[in-house]
Length: 191
Image: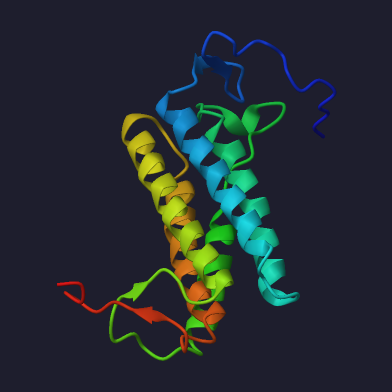
């Protein structure tokens, strides 16, 4: 259980922060950038939820927000050799979380007509917010991929973000009245 009885500690006043294992790193380190952008993705999901209709979609977004907190916890704790033997094993994103997204994507996509053009972010307010979630999620994915090239990262972390951006894309089409209000790209329309 987390207990936060004091919000500011002053320990970051010199541009450093503590990772989940206690290691101090610069606040602009790649690891902090990665999990910070996961947190930013979570904040955009919170905005999207303001436009979500009550029911299944709102519940799915709430589950995604929880997953993103799990992912942040995963990323803020570097992988060590004997994690299983630790008194408190770190929370890691799981393949079950990735598979859940895949199932939801397949279910949502099954009711949509195939795309005949790229679509522009927009349509309904809910869809526009989901597209914002998608683009911030893609940035988080790029940062986690860069982190994985430099340090060990749970492979499911990259997979989760990759599937999640696809989830947001398909969910935005659903939010656009099952694609009826998608805004199609017209190549060269502004010439």
